Amino acid sequence: MSLLLEIKSVITRLSQEEVNELLCWLQEYVDDEWDRQLKVDAKSGKLDKLVQQARADIAANQVKSLNEILNDS
Image 1 (cartoon, rainbow, N blue to C red):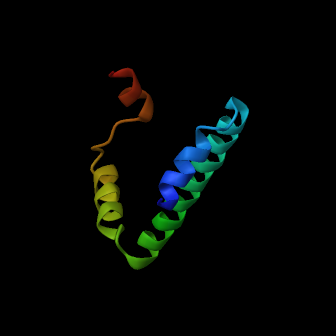
Image 2: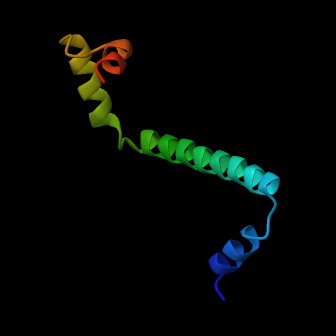
C-alpha cells in the first residue's frame, strides 16, 4: 500500500474535530510552501517581467482599484 493510500485510510477514521485540525494544518502547510516558492521565484528573477509590466500599467494609469474590480461582479 502506498503512503498516500495509508494516509487516506487513516483520515477516514479521524473524528470531525481531528479532520478540522488536519485541514487547518494542511492549509498552513500549503500557504507556507506557496510563500517559500514565491520567494525563490522572486529571488531568481522569474517574476521580474511581471513586476515590470505591473509598474508600467500603474505608470500608464491602466489599473483599476480593488473596490472597482470587486464591485464589477
